[in-house]
Image (cartoon, rainbow, N blue to C red):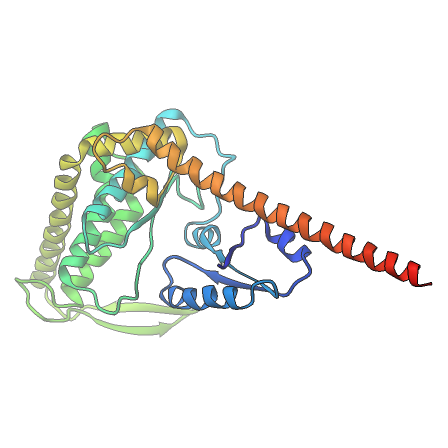
Length: 316
């Protein structure tokens, strides 16, 4: 069986003096999953001769996507709670829409320029995106704003990037992808590239003011449809929204297993803590097992060396 290699046991594994093969993988990487069984097979074939293991690049992946954590920031309790509801809104709406990628982690630890994040990672490669999927994406992006409105009865500027991304999707649906039932399969605006102090992309308008107004109306209708979908989902899952937000406020982070467990009837915070503690214990036990094996092998090597020395002395 392939070893689970982490930052905690990496040096110990190298210290054993055997050849080491490490497969770096990520849960969202399709090719990585295809290589996994091969790594397991090699680990069995070369057991005792080489150390073959796998290292999940989860932490590094998150840093690249959302930026490094900034735990030194002092956040007021009320702001933490607001961020928790915002991120819980994103996560729940995305989770309830089958077209969206699974929620991998939800956090209210400031990272990069954000106060929190909801990280969804794809399970497989995707080459085509359809109209309903885009509307679902818009609903997911607006889930944070909707949660603020429903629970806090106020809205923050924290959703500005979400709104910008949702608007960009809706406008492209109308002007580039021909997905408007009213305007039909027509491309509005001619895109071309200009080089001026670097490369910029500009759009030339080739339609009338009347069409421009219709485009705005269609974009607004798509955004409104996404907003209504997000609102419907959160109203139907209000109890879960409160539960996840309160847990995040206290613990700051929730992984995929904990998040999915939160939707089960009768689940408690203790149940989520148990999932977290079980993973930590598994990691500790693995490290202790590796340490014990390493010590045993080192003692055996010393004993063999001493035996050889004694035999040599007796011969002389």
